[in-house]
Image 1 (cartoon, rainbow, N blue to C red):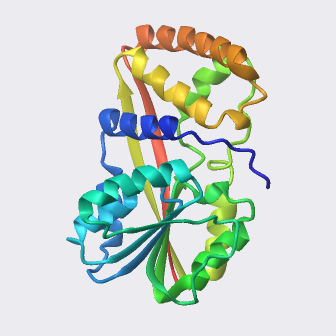
Image 2: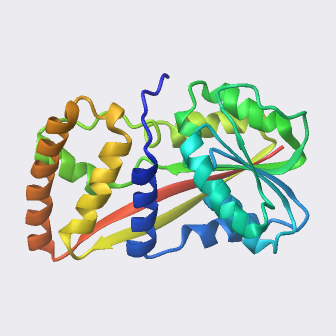
Length: 266
């Protein structure tokens, strides 16, 4: 499946900020509790973005780990390296295209993470096989992604506002099916964990900010709804009308994030 996808740094960071402000649960602590990583581990974060997971591990392990973060976005890596300076550059950030062979020998890492990124790979079996290849025997692969039940309110409002069906999303349309199946093929054991986090909006503005960031970040996926800046703004106006109507009716907008965490052991 070819993913026609465009990511912008500001939109991605805006969504992360909204999750932290309006979510009822802490997905970062959930991840740390699930993985319970040992000090001295060698960790690779694939699709690390601005380094969020890398810095979480560094702090949780008191700096006692060899952490590498890889991403294809030069802009996000610049932000990661700027933040990394505060640690004394203890984390290694590098350019990494998960559609290409990883620049590592076999059996190198105790833990490989790919948080909200694996479903954008052009060749899912290849990328998962590469992650498995560079894992040590007994090492763990951890991925996160949206399950089919994810963000139902978001999609309901968009569908009502535009009168058009929602295009297949690369995450929720295949994360809990194709991607989970591929991980099971290459791992001796796979554990599935579900994280539910309701985002509660008592005003319409943060919901619209989330929607704008989501549609803008993924805009190449939404071409059936709009084309160009003018079409984008028209759709946002339609969405605002429906969102305000629902907020007046229900007094709040509750959009539940439903995330699958898959832990595969080599």
